[in-house]
Image 1 (cartoon, rainbow, N blue to C red):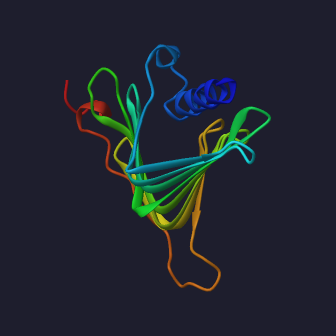
Image 2: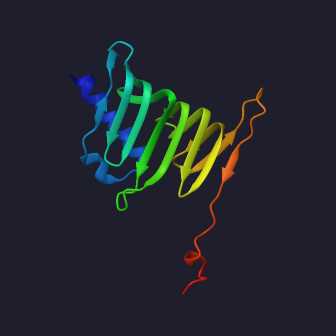
Length: 172
């Protein structure tokens, strides 16, 4: 039972970090739904299969397959796969998406506070959209890097919307 408590505590920390570290998130329940779940207590690996949905507060993660790996009683890596796997963080006030990401493979490294999106990756924030073969996002420093694979000729694509007319002080 202690391992399950530790597992869910670590999962809560992961969801809080991804959702912007809001203190209110710690008070909200975590919900995990899937068609099948299997946990190996010796290796501290839990696998969820089939229509996996993880939610806490304003964050939701959807995937076909999720593997959660723990070390030293905390989550070290969450690996999501799907066609595509996706995550979405909503603005609490407007209930509009603030951060949306998707890829065939989504990896979250908890200690490094990094999300790695690979194979048909896309990341959208505040209207800007970046697509590429891979996108690495440093949550702590808010830095992203995108690119294609070495043997691929796929290039990244970035779309930055214009500022609104009102924010440019063109309209009083």
